[in-house]
Amino acid sequence: MIQPLLPTKVRGVKRVDDRRVLNGIFWRLRTGAPWAEIPSRYGPHTTCVNRFNRWRRAGVWKRILDAVSEAYAGDIQMIDSSSIRVRQHGANAQKKMADPVAWVARAAA
Image 1 (cartoon, one colour):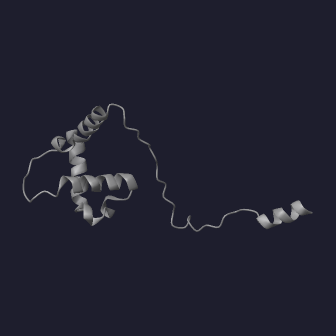
Image 2 (cartoon, helix red, strand yellow):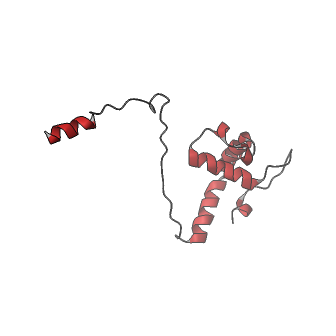
Image 3 (spheres, one colour):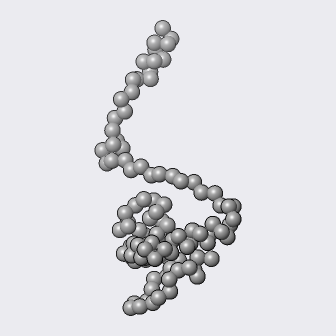
């Protein structure tokens, strides 16, 4: 369903497979990782970011979303989520909590 909506102009070197690039773009959007951290199994990260931006300017993403929405006629449910990164020092920070053993001792007294 998506393949006919993708641009097919071929110039220069042989194109990296569109499916690989799409999976790389989706991986990056799902994880929130920087473009440079896209695993090599999805092709060069520069290819992923370049196609993402080129397709955005050309309106390809809107056409894909419209086609998928129309094909499934409201049968798709999506959940929006956010990822929050923890700072390097925040992950191991000491928690400022009272000692739970002291609570038990006071309750028993």
